[in-house]
Image 1 (tube, rainbow, N blue to C red):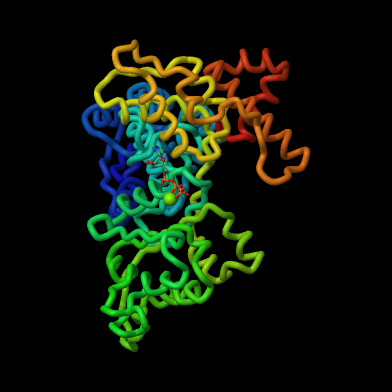
Image 2: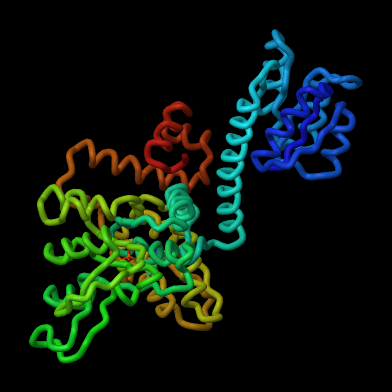
Length: 448
Ligand SMILES: Nc1ncnc2c1ncn2[C@@H]1O[C@H](COP(=O)(O)OP(=O)(O)OP(=O)(O)O)[C@@H](O)[C@H]1O
Ligand SMILES: [Mg+2]
């Protein structure tokens, strides 16, 4: 970090700047407030350590001037013994923290560490917001709802490591896109991302597909086959519909994750594999463990990080954006726009097939609007393929409370959209206080 140390006491500046330098910080020294301000004008700093009592200018004035010029620059105040009031005053005026003389240099180091961490979190959030503002995408995903931003942030945090990732979400919520993003944000991005769905091949062939086999290992093994795990070496293996993996294969998969080795079927030669595992499921995998259909140890291996993808009906503020995105994708140069009645219908439909269903509906609606018309897609075009008149139905048999919560969530989301998030308007319509409204929005993740 680049630190500006402004203090007129040489005994402090010498030892403190030595300590800071030994920890890899760059230090610039100023012995009075005016010089400090001059430096701040001329160079970028990551933090300022500011003695409040220096010749010339009053420390609090220096602080005010710094905050004026660089409101985001963290300033740590160094105060004399017994001047807590000044310190509190400084905090009120925007100082990041303070230390009191005499202090241990470690105190300063800890504060700088905190500043660094705080800054990287802020930077990361800014980066994501900027990325999203520039285009509606994060990697290849569309959506700006708080729920999706959480997902993006999680991907950003965990992609660089090698930890296993489990992606849970209903059908069509974008699990495969998340797997792509995890791979493409990781250091393995130039190696292969090998995808395998346990639903796509007959149960008896899953093991052979994943582990490979030697020629003649079993009746159908006419040739040698290199398995998916081996193909994914140095890269990522994406195992989709993991809940469909037969239990014998689950055991073998667990061993691959524990030891990073495997044998092809019909071979005794042990092969090393360097893979990162990403698995996906439409089910609640923990429930599968409890019910005995999924191996507990494998669950905990995979579940190091779980990314839960929200169903589309729980992030309806993303629906207009997605409609727009799919219109562009399928309009093939012709200009279409979504009619208000279509958007309204799209926002109140439950979308059991989630984003995939919405995508299909929009692409079909486009086909239904003859070329040469004004290009407005209407509700009736969308309804051709989806039954938007269908009353809200809830899967399984929810308790009364669950049912009411679901209704409340959906109503609030709709209202949020219609009022463009205007809380005064919302609390007026709902006849609840702003505090109650705020609590509910938070509870349902509509606004965090
Ligand atoms: N956030 C999104 N932005 C844009 N397109 C999306 C988004 N989420 C999903 N899609 C699109 O919806 C379709 C389904 O996505 P995907 O295959 O990733 O879902 P899934 O969760 O793997 O579904 P399934 O469980 O059925 O395999 C794809 O065509 C994908 O491009
Ligand atoms: Mg999928």
